[in-house]
Image (cartoon, rainbow over all chains, first blue to last red; front, top):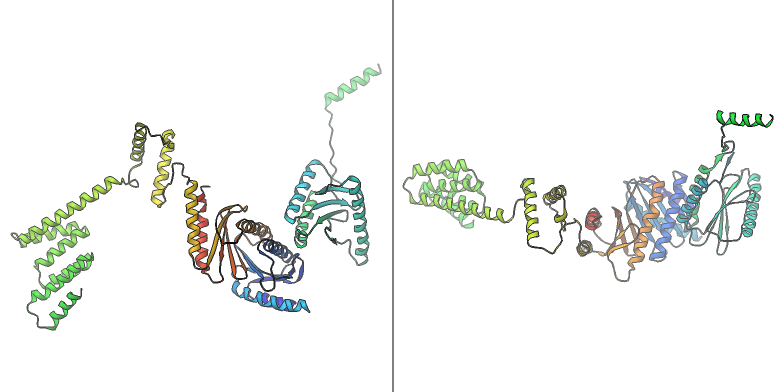
Length: 115
Length: 159
Length: 306
């Protein structure tokens, strides 16, 4: 699983990526600092829960992809039916590449979690 | 050794910190006890004193039991313990080896958020705690006039 | 112009009848430029003609007209003197001067009339502005106008401030809408409605919504079947939840949020205490949306009068 996540962290500007449960608990992570992963995980889980309550549950077929742009960095996350992938990156990171990669690794992780 | 002294000012600040925690995490209730099983603070729960005493004592017992396990594996105590029920879940979190925060939550709350926000609450409680040796003493001073008056009174008694 | 070009080509193709005829072609060209308002070009061609024939009356007359049009009074006067001295009894020259002077007078008259009907507040001195406001005030009182105005109860120093403000607004191109400087509810609604309609006009945009950061809907033009109340509560929560965590992560302030659910995309922008939500299809000009939303956020405080 770590190898799969590392595909995203190898993109320049990415500060870390994590796979978390819908409850915000970490399944696996590649983060440069421990504190960030927990905070990102909690935030992403909470937003994802709110979105699902309002817009409908995220499924593997129709996941929820969200990007939060802030003045010093960006958080991209993809919410599937069982897990969420969250990526923390710096300001000038190529979000397009991250969006494509995050969708790719979501498919891989789904397979891995099924096994 | 730090202690939580419950004077009105501290209680207000504690209440504020706990309310903030409850709003952010959407938990049902927060109970703060000590490892001796005494209830220090509670909010979000309307049960009788008897119930609360029993609950505090049993919860402290659970935490103390896990302290022994922690010591067996070379730790002082477990920082967080989670008990999952059908409707209500309990999240135990140790501020230090004497004070425990118990959070009761249902499906509306997210454990990841509780985990993160609990750290902030613990820090707030630690900030409210004061060192044991710093006792709040009210110093009473007697001025010379008062002393003279008392001495005169005593002298008069023995005249 | 084609005919002129033909003239030019003809004049060079065939044998040149006379020097004067060939030089007049330059004058014809200059006249065309004069008619089109390209006075400098016209001057150039006139001078080219005068290089060939120094006393060519037609070129000088046109040159004079160009100088007048460009406001080069000194040059025009010099040319007039030159023309009169060279052609003292020429009726054509006299007629031209009369025509030109008449047209100048007419233009001046029109200009004066326009200035009289719309006073130049920008250039008017402040004391005169106050005086004119005083006069207007008097007029309102004498007419027993039932409409209440703030001016009637306003102390003079406030009046001067109001005049200053009006002056500033006129200079900046924004108009004051009412005496109190606030838009009426209808005007606000219309402005917001127009702003959202403009965003919705962008190809691929399905709907848009303006909410207060607490989640209260201010104006919405969303897609059918979408509960605006639910959406606004969600948008507000997203920013509320994110802000706390973003602060912990030292990421500064949230600028915008993008959400993709199936084939629908939601772009959220926050600023000045308001959130704009824009629902779009998969393919949309995000740059344009971004610009429009930012523009609206910048102006929203002014529009809502807060």
